Length: 428
Image (cartoon, rainbow, N blue to C red; front, side):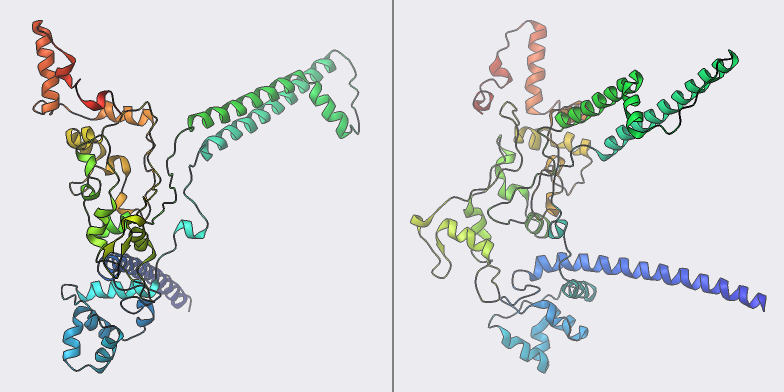
């Protein structure tokens, strides 16, 4: 009986481990499917569908209770499904006069990922549960270290005090002096005696100076550092949707970054290149509120497709990345001339734009925030480590080398030869 019991226990443990691993693998695969489904939905479905309300097409989440086989066939090619005489598909087509786009290139697994995302819905973000993007400020590890040092010092001080008293008592006993012990010392008397102790007072003052000095130093060190700064913008523009899912190149909107000091904020006519047609209408047939803000700023009448210049007004975007007035930064110098060196230094992948080196993975940001500290130390460290030794054939560095050669020969060298006539040298 005992052998049977042991075998049963071993089998039970093995089954439990296998079941746990299977659950984790399934959960991981499901999470991956939902993530892929979210990406596919944003890129292919979001222009006509919403999860929780009707738009050009019906709300998707309520429809996910339908048979999965039917949903896969409908999404892949609803026209063929209706042509086959499927009564459910024919009835579904009556929802809107606009014919749904067919997606024959999507695999069954990809469509099931979209279905999984539509069932689960949008994952909750930190901001939705009350957390905000804030500057962490003083490290909690640093604070814990200071407190630990103070506590350890107090313990050492108490132990040494007791050791000194014990030694004094032993010396007095050897000298034949009788020691009278004080009984029932009151708390008030004990505290008064503690503050009369010069060693304790000195140590307390020293600890206070160290603590206040540490907090003051760390506070001053973080002054002006705005990592994580994420202001509320007048229009909720999603870089994740545009630069990530739709893979719009950074240069399409921020063309100035490749040819001037500033990256430039795109004018609204750039937005209208797409949003004159892409309107993401809501369940009541109205244009998406965020896209409507673009139309309002331009005085654009979506029904008449006309502009009223008397209604035009600028969009007051809030600057995210701020540098002090005394700091000069040229985007084109870094994005074009120093691109290869920056890519190598920051370890960027070939498909990632060089912009990620400073601005972080913008293609994953629903709302842009300051990714890098942009401090003087941060910039200097990059300038110290970036390798530009292969730039000898670059026009900019070629001029510098040519100027050095002339200096060696004793020839005349002027600031104009080193870019001294560029407007940005003085006017910025």
